[in-house]
Amino acid sequence: MTSQTKSGAHIRVRRYSGSARVNHWIVATTFVLLLVSGLSLFHPSLYPLSALFGGGEVVRWLHPWMGLVLAAAFLGLFIRFFWQNLPEFTDFVWVARIRHVLTGNDQYLPEIGKYNAGQKFVFWAQFALVGTLLVTGIGLWEAGLGYFEELLGLKATIEQKRWAAVIHASAAVLAIAIWIIHVYAAIWVRGTISAMTRGTVSGGWGFRHHRKWLRKEIDKGEIERPRMTAAE
Amino acid sequence: MFPPLPNPTTKPGGPKFGEADLIRRSASTVTPPAERQTEVAKLIDVTKCIGCKACQTACLEWNDLREEVGVNVGEYDNPHDLTPNSWTLMRYTEYENPGTGNLEWLIRKDGCMHCEDPGCLKACPAPGAIVQYSNGIVDFIHENCIGCGYCVKGCPFNIPRISKVDHKAYKCTLCSDRVAVGQGPACQKACPTQAIVFGTKDEMKQWADKRIADLKSRGFDKAGLYDPPGVSGTHVMYVLHHADKPHVYAGLPDNPRISPLVDAWKGVGKYAGMAVIALTAAAGMIHHILQGPNRVTEEEEESADKLAGGKT
Image (cartoon, rainbow over all chains, first blue to last red; front, side, top):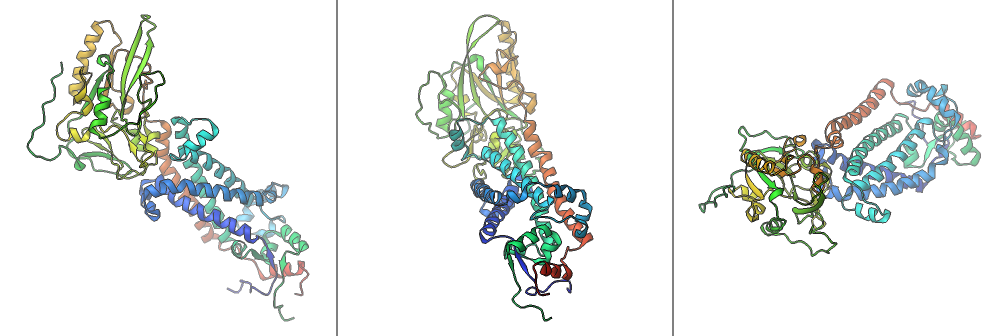
């Protein structure tokens, strides 16, 4: 495609550090494993997915442990990206112009910092859902609940565990739906994925989608100049 | 006296029911057998129970289980709760009857009720880990059990227990292995007062009627049969002297039913959840088909270079 810009001819902007990327992919990997193992116990027709892990018994013990890993890693992402995800006035303008967002008319949108309102929604929604899944998941954890009960000095009732089951399943469905939006947005907005693979995005990507952030990064010098400049 | 079950024949023969008689199988759809077997039931007459715990011992004995030596905390219940090894338990209640001022010692043999509409089976995610035979027996098939504990949440009577040893769920089998060869459950066989009797569900109801008539003639005008309709009846029933308030018998539920939470979780929730996930994915695909990719243009790259003070 001709519209594809040649890499190397333009500046690139540093978006995620190596540790942020590793942190992200720990969350991503555990999320997918939790999604597959969780769905295998959610609907009988998906039970065969448990074979990918070595059977239902493995899913039963592995899923909670992976959940703990995800929760800890997600906390890392939360601390890293907390400040840039605080709401600001531009977010309301962005939401009001959601039509232009969906039609890819970024020129009608205000200049945006590191994250737009949609990305912030994903951040805060997943934060709330991971927290919910963690608490309810511990409630459903047959082998591990006793430890937490002793730690907190309480005893979960069966009725509470029923609530935990319903809330855990509902929160998981929402988290999966938001994860689909997250992945889709990364695919739809071309040039995004390199932020999480190489750590950089093209200057044009920053100019088009996050101009305010781009200006700041340029000021800070967080850019990589092209090795070869185009012949004048 | 209820006529005792005859001894089984010594001639070899196959079991009276098996795989072909399943009417429900967890996380699976089964074609119910054309003919339903006669429904069986165990009737526990708490008014005849002397609390000897022979049934508890017989259960451990027949199923080759051992209970850990416990501690005495000043009550007769031993062990203090159902465990993965103790599938039945005598629960003792000292009840002050407000009507008569009498202190009554209520003794209820707790254990699986073998619901006609079993909540454990409804909640179970592992195909074939819980089955229901057409004679009404609800059984756990341990080779299929994954130990998730969902049955504990599904049960309206708080019966299943998860073993800390092999992480599988255990409860009373109604001695399905004995019933399969024409025997009654071990607890029934051991009961010295015929507080436990076993037969077809119809026989048990008729026997219960006689017992209730007798109790009423002795002044227990609220005596009755516990065969709760909320779970479509059970295959373990009680004769209670205070059938109007089952809860006085160590918390026997007054109107047990599968929790609406479990219904929502394992009923409509299953389909709604899958629908939400599928619709989100479909929305993404449709958006991409209609909208195409959101690409950065060459001009934008150049504008960025300019912002950075590049040579372009």
